[in-house]
Amino acid sequence: NVGHYIFISTISVYADNSQQGADEDAKLAEYTGPDIMKETRDTLLANMELYGPMKAGCEAEARKHFGDATTIIRPGLIVGPGDETDRFSYWPVRIERGGEVLAPSRDGADPMQYIDARDLAEWTIRMAEARAFGTYNATGPDYEMSVAAMLYGIRAVTTQGAKLTFVPSDFLAEQQVAPWGDMPVWVPGEGETAGFSRVSIARALAAGLTFRPLATTAADTLAWFHAQPAERQATLRAGIKPEREAEVLAAWKAKQKA
Image (cartoon, rainbow, N blue to C red; front, side, top):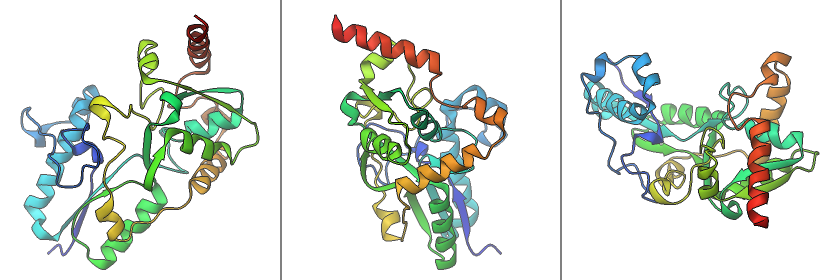
């Protein structure tokens, strides 16, 4: 009796993240373990490489039961006020603190993709109202945003005059600074992850996906974070720790002088 089933999946379902501009028809990751329906949350947390394949399995299960009445939405990183992971919040909070900020990629040229939770939610409701079926990548913005554009855009809503120091991915790897975890939102824009932040969203744009400005997302995220209890604000849940950031910046400067 279900007339329309919407499943929120992830852009992590794709098998090959090196392909730039991949659309919804790209090959999906495959789960090769035991019965996927018997896997547990603990198994996933112990091996996050299963996340994409298991989400792909969930998509298949949705289509199995609901057929052409299924809508699959594959968001990128979901950001904005209320995000308890701090995977985007790290940047507004860190940049607002001022000083020298460690930033990833050579000259800040690597791409970034994300979507404000409110844009995703509003569009999903419109998709339900329109009974729009099919599969859609849902991330943004509607142009290729570089690391530099995102971080300088965030800096524009603060007043501390943070200085951004961009460090190439190979040096960050030498220093064991992890993409996504230590440097949130970012993965290297070359090699095996060249396409991760260059996913095609043409289909979603044609279906009416829209975006609020980065400045709005950054300012609202900061306002939300500052409204949290002091103990919550004391420790960010993502991003490099301040003392480690200082060490990496010092090592980078030393290499530049060598």
